Picture 1 (cartoon, rainbow, N blue to C red):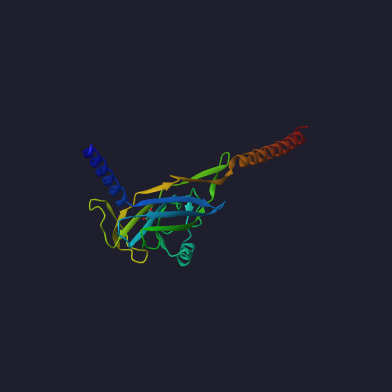
Picture 2 (picture 1 turned 90 degrees about the vertical axis):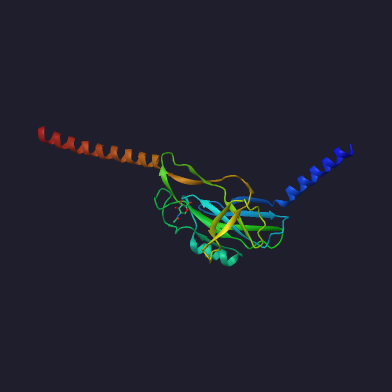
Length: 232
Ligand SMILES: *[C@@H]1O[C@H](CO)[C@@H](O)[C@H](O)[C@H]1NC(C)=O
């Protein structure tokens, strides 16, 4: 009996230790505002019991070509909040969603360092939806924004030595590569979806049919008038 008891006790201690060593990370996301100008808000909560901080953080957003980020606005964001950011590519802000210049891109966002075991960071990234080409039926075109990845780089690194690391920019100022560990984050919702209105080519078709009918009607009328004038 006492054996069983100590066994259960040992198991629960082992369970507690393995859980408490892991950090708990949640990211809840939302797209604010309506229309073509949105704000992608990511609220990051980190709770880690292992004393590895201070740690630098890096959030990588994988964004579709149907949206863009204005680099001037990105600089403003940096000035306003205690974070820094850059994009992996120069973004064409004029291209429509069907243009070959509307390419997917990555945003590298460095929030303020983690200095305590429990931190909260709210990241507000201004996003602009590109104008959609007109399609048959028009309506709303869906845009999906997938999950970001959150990486950590700690001064005192006592992470699992077998953990996979990624070579990514050290900071937005120092673009040389550092080793980052990916955090196992619970991200909600899994995919953000928003609608953007597209023009309707069907209306264009009616306009075309009406003008053709009018044009051919008028041509036939003139031709008939000329014909009857000549032979009668
Ligand atoms: C930026 O990242 C996107 C998405 O991963 C990729 O398709 C694109 O080629 C990258 N651009 C550059 C210039 O590296």
